[in-house]
Structures are given as structure tokens and as C-alpha cells.
Amino acid sequence: MAPRDYIIHPSEYDLDRVVADIDEIRRWNRQRFEMEQLTAIVHEDLSRGLCVGYKDVGLDEFWVRGHFPGVPLMPGVMMCEAAAQLSSYYTHRYNLLDAEVIGFGGLEDVRFREPVRPGERLVIAVERVRVRPKAMIVCRFQVLVRDNIVCDGVIKGVPLPIDALAAANGSAT
Image (cartoon, rainbow, N blue to C red; front, side, top):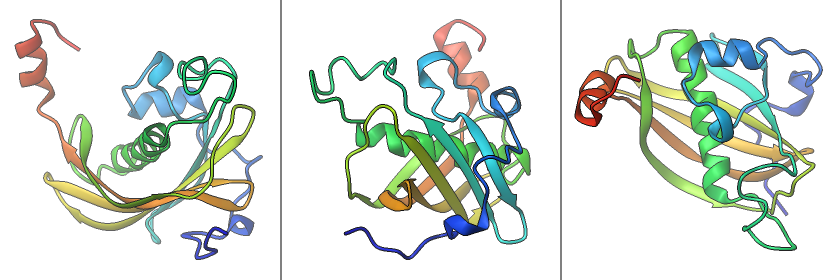
């Protein structure tokens, strides 16, 4: 049985009250196509350092065919990616790092508690733990299906030197 120590209790947000749709998410996050792991943002609370969003997991996800054939289960790394994207959205939206692009800086204490299948709605909550401007943001995260915590942990985001990375690639992003 998953723990019930919610970052934010499900009764505190309304999944039908979208505060940022996919177009607004794209304003702040660079991921596109199969790497977009958020459908909508439904709760933002700057004073408490909280943000809640969701991803509707479809049968057309790029991993469904091969993970695993006949029994598709969402890879844990994709749940962590959804949490990273929510944290990135929140960080960009409120300019917490003063960075153009935020990348993974690390994960700690991640636990996968239950499988996630196509057709389910993944609800992601992040809570700001600490911010070092221009250096790093640390957030706790939880991923829920219905009211069950299916994944949780700590995620770190760091500014990426996007100009240097693009130059090394020989193309602009």
C-alpha cells in the first residue's frame, strides 16, 4: 500500500480547473512531440512552493509497443521526466533560477510503488524544497494515479548552458 503523506492533498486541487493548458506549458518548457509529458497544470501556489499538473497517458505513447509487449507499463524514468517537466514549468514560470533552460541535476530517494498503464491519468505534484538562484532548484515530487502515490522522490534542476550546447551541436535550438 502506498503512503498517504501527500505533498498536497487531492482535495486541495480540481483536475477540471486548468490554469495552464498545453500551449501555456509550451511557453515555458521546450520539450515537444513524444517528449512532452504534461497535459495541463491545475494548481499553482507560489507561497507554499507547490504546483500540480497531469498527463493523460495514452495508447499512442512511444513506449507502449515495447514496454512491454502485450502488457504496457509506463517506464519509471518517464514518470520522473513528467515530474522534471512540472518542476521546470514552475521554475520558469516564476523565474526561480533566472535560466533559459533547466536540465536534470539529479534524483534522490525515488521509489516506484505501483505500475501505470495507458488510459490512466498521471497527477504530478512538486513542492519547492530550496532554490539557489542561477545554480539549482530542489523539489520533492509525487506522482499519483487516482489517489494512490505511484512514484515519489526528490528532483534537482540546474541551468543548462544552451548556447554552448547548441554551438557544440552546430545548430541553434
